[in-house]
Image (cartoon, rainbow, N blue to C red; front, side, top):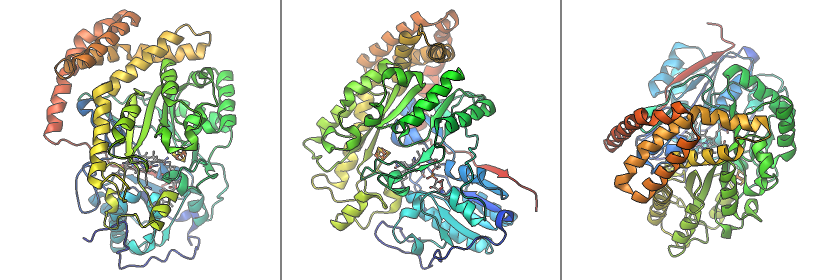
Length: 567
Ligand code: B12
Ligand code: SF4
């Protein structure tokens, strides 16, 4: 198979994605929406890469943490959102193998086959289009998701429609449905098959947060940001739920359906929309909801709130860009991010920092100091990414104009976790990987496992708020402490023992925290580590051996149908 590289369009087919015609069957058309095929965590000719598994944390956050890495899978929410918002019979096929996808096409009659993919997966999208033409020639092929941003994509894949940007309204329009109808939010369990320290966590109803997607895009328009660019760029975004009231209603419904009290809010910059967030808080107070929210927000947006407001809003996990103070991004303006992240943690808010390696001003001489600065935030989690011009972004355009894009880089390797895809003024491709790997390693070495760090933040929150006058806040911390203090203490016991051999200093820090937990725990939770601790130590060591032998994890294949009547 020929290589799909970031410079060249290689497919012999030409897409006929120009004129838009509604599907003749309208809402009677039978639709298949599929994510790209696996297995993912391996090197193959379709663009799977062992360093690019289908796992959020292990891919780009805790990947250097060995058996302490948090491992879990997330469904393909974009196609789930589309499925929930059309009245046509629709099947979502998530994480298929090639055989699963082929079987779907041959055993069913689909009028429309929709494929979702991001840029790294373009070769898989191309193969799936080819398979669809061969096995289901009557189907109309629609391709959406970030892969659509590749320049010249029409010539690389054989699709009938390539949809750039928001897909719900497109699909509704295509089926002749009302594209402005209110958005129906599907019930989404945020993660599945969670694993840490060599054990898979039980999947009880209500134990995992629900994903809520209030909007797509971000108006801040940072030059490298692909999600912002894909949904309109600076000043633009698409809101699915405009008001705090709408959001409250969706969250209440999810609370009932999924029995959850915590929510992963998948909005690139949730706190930026203060009016909506504050209205949500009013409704939460009225409805006595002690919900917990995991959100993404930029430092300038966080600064619009007092700590009390954030805590009352239930913000318990915050993903924020730290970047470099020298980079001049407006989202960081006026922020001392070290002080901010410390303050957040002191209020029981877990912080996930995100740092870019290889910014324009970085050199081999100053990059170590920049990484040390990032790591000194001591955030609960830390994502590191290479500065990467991704097609569709202003940065990509700029690099192209400056002639700095490397033409022979396979799109499968343009994901920010491998090597540069552009010519940097001072850092070579190989060096970029070394610095990136070093950043992950340094964060782990200095700050210890993220599991230890999140336990520490929880305890800080609990100590501060266990007697809070606000019953909702009290309840939230008590719920988490009650559910987790025994488990965290046991995990701390195992980590303390494991780190004795590796780093005495980290082991001592973990031990001190375990003692604090002991003081704050009930009798059962106090006794648990004696039993569960050694078991976790054993599973941790077993997992280390498995990982050393090359063990990887793959998400399960899932098929879900709506409005379905057998043909
Ligand atoms: C959840 C997620 C994941 C999950 C994957 C889940 C899955 N099943 O694929 C995990 C954590 C595993 C993951 C992994 C990776 N991800 Co990811 N991920 C996301 C995240 C945070 C949310 C995606 C989402 O659901 N958004 C909300 C939905 C509603 O939006 P959407 O998917 O874009 O869908 C809309 C439209 O695009 C369109 N659409 C989508 N599909 C289709 C299909 C059809 C037929 C139509 C008509 C329309 C359509 O309609 C939808 C509704 O409007 C996004 C960031 C973001 N905010 O979007 C990054 C993001 C998609 N990931 C990205 C990347 C780079 C990766 C990784 C390479 C990791 C890395 N190194 O960064 C790996 C790749 C893994 C692999 N082997 O494929 C980039 C993609 C960049 C690009 N331009 O291609 C994003 C945008 C993050 C970023 N800002 O860099 N990811
Ligand atoms: S603030 Fe974050 S989400 Fe918004 S444009 Fe910048 S990087 Fe993207």
